[in-house]
Length: 201
Image 1 (cartoon, rainbow, N blue to C red):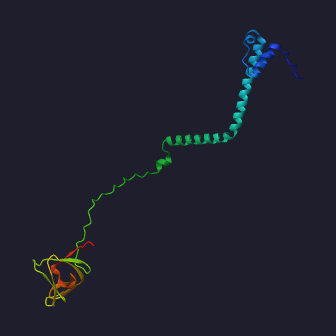
Image 2 (cartoon, rainbow, N blue to C red):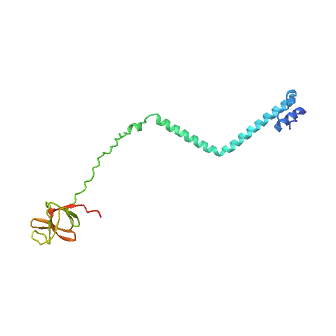
Image 3 (spheres, rainbow, N blue to C red):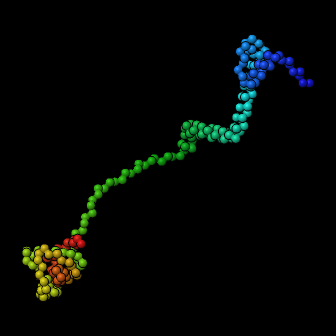
């Protein structure tokens, strides 16, 4: 059978209604009427308890999806602690049986001083250049053919630059090169030609 509802006084109901409305307690009633104070305080406690239960149930509902993630995270942390504890326990029998290789020092590269590559000296060659030298100021005889007895075709002063057209040819114990200068060409003996770099264009 349902219990008979307890009869409440008018002051009790006023305290109850003020607390439900969220109003501050009526100071005159709160200090002088026991029923008002009792109802007001009891209703406020029930409201706080109900609010806490609502917040807790809402938190549990929202955390329901996060529960699995939290459990997984705890499992990972526990596994990490277990692994660290095993590593810090010292070497095992398997570790002691396995020889460890001694690391070799990394060899340092040997620095070699940079030596400039020597530029090859120019040499007499076809399509090269030379300067007349070693004639002691006398002009160099240019001949029509290799040889000291070949006809004379031109004379070139000492210091004159020439272009080498072809060669070498050997005659009368000399090496001969056909040269060109001042629009004239002929054969000159190699001892009087010094190779030079091509002139700047």
